[in-house]
Image 1 (cartoon, helix red, strand yellow):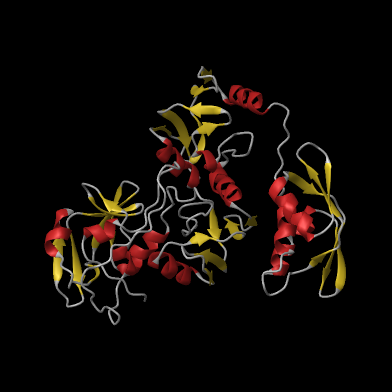
Image 2 (cartoon, one colour):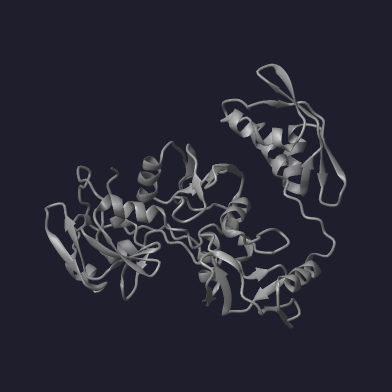
Length: 398
């Protein structure tokens, strides 16, 4: 197991933190350097002792987990230290102390519920399932264990993860995933595959599609016309600002009050949000209050935002593009150019070569490929007749 050193709370507090469902707080990657170097290369340390994101009056924060005061920690000499408040870190620990783990059983707070943790493995399982409350603002989504406990989807392996230095690691099992994510901060490398509870698979090509999948687990519609967008911090429905507090219906049929964007974001990502509890109060672009009494009125209001603009996904356009790129080991296949794709205005964009494809992906909103399209795999030509056949390339090219 990778070794880490914990010195005082200042070192813990300096570790990476996730922001809330806003874009105000950048990820802090600063790590406090000890004044006296201690050799811990032969010490087996639970990496979670170094993954604190702060503290509050209840205990030490590990993302969505709070290790409740009081708790004990043990060093490499089997000495134990009782932590009753954040000040204990400053008074108890010195530069020569190497903390290796918590003392179990351990009481933690998860989603406002106190849970007893039996050992380090159980703590790791709870930690990796923490749904990120931000951290995706720069276009990378923090990796966490998507499973049937926190979603209607489960991760399909292998999955690639990106670290803060830009290195990509291929993970082939849940155990390897948990070991990686408890050790340091990783981000998903798209595309990833999710397996629905009904056994069907879903290819997720980017953050937008990941949010759409997670949010719609309980039937809540999230698409371009409904307006929820991670890039604006989930502060708007379409062109309207959300007014808090608001009431929403969750998966068990109850109505709960949501006080801010962070609470709303948590419900959305875990698929708990089923519908709004009407009336719903919004503010339009001119600062006027808009009250909608039901889903039909909300739909009409949103249509006013977008007018007659036809929104498209471009999923097959992206899928064909991503697997035609040479990743250093050769492309999965070659495209027989020219090809064409429809754009958001209803026109047709002709793509003459790989460079033009790349430029079109960056500058045009492409909706759907124009079929048929000929590709060459292992020297043999094959014709794609529709988007479903294009999506099948994902399994072929893995």
